Image (cartoon, rainbow, N blue to C red; front, side, top):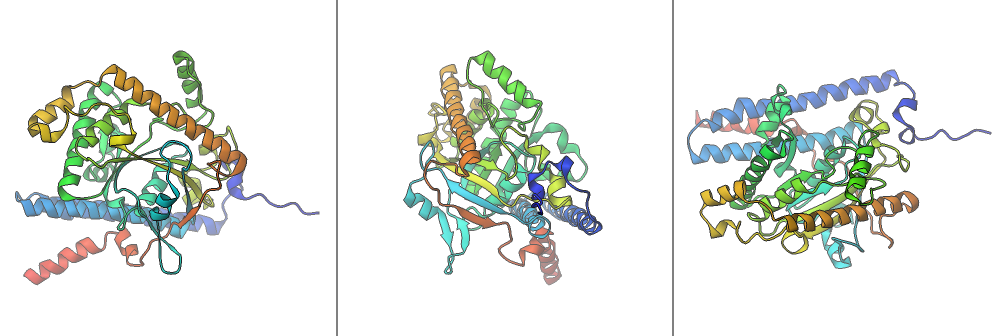
Length: 420
């Protein structure tokens, strides 16, 4: 009697069979194409956009900013294309209907845009938001960026920002590109990072409002992956504070998120906080995600998750998140220089910090409980959820060229030849 061979994604990476020669060839192809795409993005930024920015005029600055948005969108398309060609999967999205940040049935219906044949088109969600999530695997950022491609009528992937370690900004080519993407580099010292983070986010928010562009800032409140090393640290901190530890996630750190929301909300009146819970199939309860999924195992070894399960909540920051009193920080109430000084000097009252910390911890407790429920019942909610399946594929074939930054240099060369 034959036994069924388990799917590879259910096995820890260490127990999987070696790669076949065909898979090895695909891995080499992925490595070449992905790095070619990154190189094209960086070359477009450095060789075309930076010289344009050197001109001291408004039009050159506008072209430069639009070009940077294009290259950022190109990188987002590249991420989806690599999934489409080398690691096929889908996003399986559900919406919270019971707890904090819940959606009503009408809101869920309005949030999912479908075509004439019922096929998925996009998610009609707010396009200016902070995205927070649990952090289980290093690929979390990859799939979160892919999700933003489907949000709004044209996607938000061109207008995404993240925080990174300061040392990463000097990595040749990649680090330069991340600087040009206007990502935020932090020294992991809150005394210096607080001012830099608040001012950087305020400037990005002001630019998004002035240009009427989407805005997405991705932050992981846990600060790091759930792992064998970080799990005891979370437990130790919980014991020190006299609070229960989490089972599937780490205790969130509220300070960075709190300052970020306050810095952004004073510039973007309709700012939203979107919280997603992300799970990968095949990871048993109390196991660690990086033992089953890494960038290499997914894209080089070809063992991709059959689906990435995403459970979504949404909060209007002004009315649904206790970030504290912003009346003294509204930019309309003071000159720009004074507002910048307040970003640097004002401290959040301790009572407001404690209120936000408790709110975030309660949200994370609901997240932790929903993960336990999903592992036991394959459902995040008590009620039967409506599942929206989003194949990770580009909408248009021309976006394959976008992924390699073809259109921007081609367009500039075309108009240059016209002007000669």
